[in-house]
Image 1 (cartoon, rainbow, N blue to C red):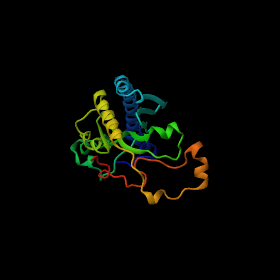
Image 2: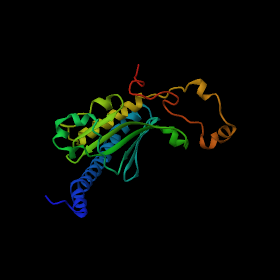
Image 3: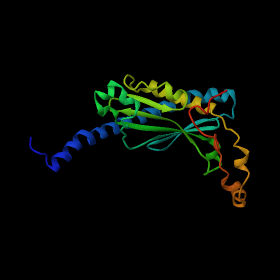
Amino acid sequence: MPKKSGKELILKVLKEKSSLKQDVFHKNIHVFEELKSVIKEIVADLKQDAQIIDKRILVDYSEKGPHEIELKVAGDVLFFHMHTNVFEFDKSHSMWKTSYVRDNPTRSFCGMIYIYNFLADSFKYNRANDVGYMIARIFTNTEMHYFVEGKRQLGFLYNDFPNKVIDKLALKNIVESAIIYALDFDLYTPPFDEMQEVSVSQILEASENMRIKTGKRLGFRFQADSDQID
């Protein structure tokens, strides 16, 4: 067999990989648009009932860009961000243990949507130094199969990659699980020893920019087994 030229090798990669990545990217855009619709429906469904419970409880939806969604529920904000790149998993990942991926390695290429949890007050008071936490990420391939890596229920309810196809019901379940996790993920008092020192500038600027950093687990190790609810 004659050796392929550089041009032929380039075209082969473009056909087998670059075109595939375009397919995955556009499928992920479709999933994110569905996600927007799902979150809007959840907000519309929760908003009135939340106001009946307590008029101070806010439930709101906003878009910060074509690939960013902000969902506010009471004192929490869930930030959904669609990454514009396509990822493949290294061979040590558990997905490679499935015949679904081994039989067709192109199925391992996925688009990704992050879910972050922030304090609503961090945005309300422009506390730029506050921190949020990634609580989940959603992976979808070109066949619309999906799985979720995440905290607590988000990490084990949605991991049947070979068999589960993402749709509006799956997205609704994921969003509701994320809301439940965020609401149950309480703000802990930081360790006293880590909060003893504060600079003059921090205090002087606190009323303007709230420079003293706040986060739900600031100063604590944040692991899958360290945020259980009593």
